[in-house]
Amino acid sequence: MTREFKLTGWHVLAIFVGAFGVIIGVNVALAWNAVATFPGLEVDNSYIASQTFDDRREAQEALGWTVEASHDGERLVLAITDAKGYPVQPKMLTAKVGRTTTVRDDRTPDFRFDGRAYLAADDLAPGYWNIWLEAEAFDGTTFQQRLELYVKG
Image (cartoon, rainbow, N blue to C red; front, side):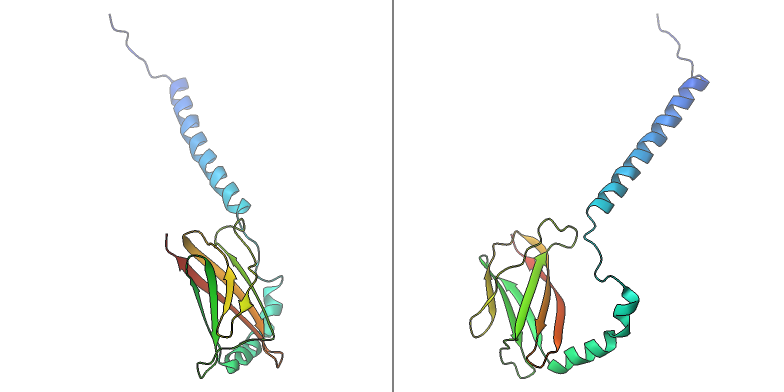
């Protein structure tokens, strides 16, 4: 004996509410995670920062510095060279290393100049990393650059 199933208005309502409940729940979870993992702002006021951008960029380009980042499995290497290809040792150098999507892995390695490049002991996990570099030339010019680095696994 088989019982015949009858689709009623209450069944349709339950299906409708359940389907949209899942959709809304997933959207809330994704929005929550997006906000919770947002690393923050680059500058407090983008309008103010834009007022001096061209001047700062021209001063930085006038230095003629080029930066290359690499990782050899144990050490993070930042090689700064001038327009002629000679190593540069700025007056001050700081760098923050981290992932694009989260601040959980952010760190500030202790770089030491070896005469050719800046070295820091850091065993970065495989994947993509960003390096936010800030240096100051002896004439007071600020040099800022974001470098991308891929570490093989």
